Length: 339
Image (cartoon, rainbow, N blue to C red):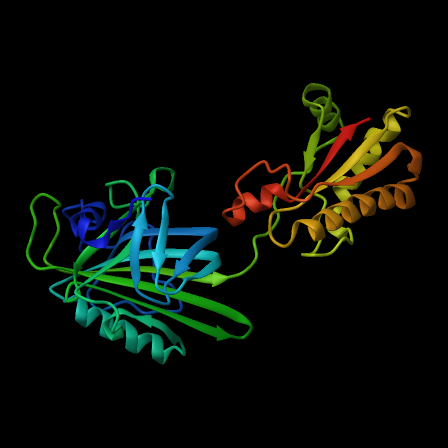
């Protein structure tokens, strides 16, 4: 396993990804400050992106290295994986220093009731260099998520600083990850003005809303005829439970419609989970969920129990990676397989 230290990466990539427009005095079109935080006076927004649901690592310790083979970051202490509504804002503050930016944001976060999770300027283990993983997009000053990648910034501690914080207020948890970097002179190549730049990730923690389209009875029939199965995402359960939620009504109605249209048709109902939790417990849970679907079809729609059988396979047949919430959501499903 080959490791690459932070010193091998350059801050130029970060700045080059951000600063390509010669007219940076105005905010990027459509960009705005997050309501939880004010901006540094005189700064302008050069990159802005909002995702309804995303996963962001919130640092709680020094970043040590990045393994290019496994594409995993290594920290002294593991970061917090914050999931929810994510707002990404990058500001340019011409004429400022990174120390000035960090100090101002630290005071603003404290004034807004945030608790500090990590501050690189107070990290005794940081050493001479510090490096932080930052997402960046296309070179047009806008974040293009279809082309987004990752880059490390490395510089002496006087140039790159990072801070993370958390606030719990009115039942809502809010995370902030700030990285500031200093550019000491104008650079013609990257069209960057001398000054400091602040990269902010703000995450409003929350669960992803299931938003899959209900599959119609005819679509179920066609899918099973062509692939031997159909995956359904409209049958919903609370985490760790096997009670079919009321929001599943539309999907159940379509299954019942299919079975009533084809009275000799029999189905195996197969429950699938993600990889969170133990395999044995998830196999039991996935089977109980399949049994709950069958029970609902029998009791609410008059489908003969003999036409349905239930199976649970937990996470043994994933359709996506379980490494992130988007993939885990695809793996949590009910499949219909004709007998």
